[in-house]
Length: 129
Image 1 (spheres, rainbow, N blue to C red):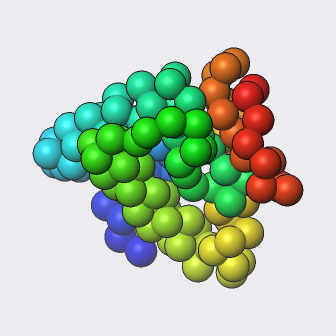
Image 2: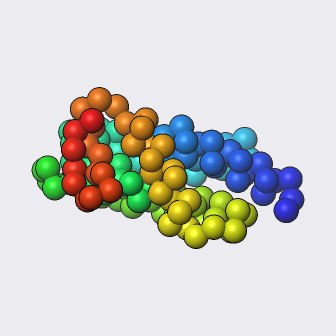
């Protein structure tokens, strides 16, 4: 693996743990960073409203607690696609199933969720943290 790919993977994983944004501007991805920051900002608002939350599966999902705007849905999809990419790379590197890696990160995201945000437990039930 080249140094650039290694750095990208490490930065992406750290960004995921820091809230799902991809801080890749150091590698010349200014546009991608701006898009990810915009998506994160939209999602932070949706989480505060309780319409989008973290799941134990490692992805964002609609909570059913209100209407989700097209912008919120697009931001959720953008972040989930980024997460899937990171999970897939990590799973390949560690010789694990993608779902296992996603679940590990899902637990971390739920642990980091702010008080008042919605999180889905392993039974599929939404609760307010």
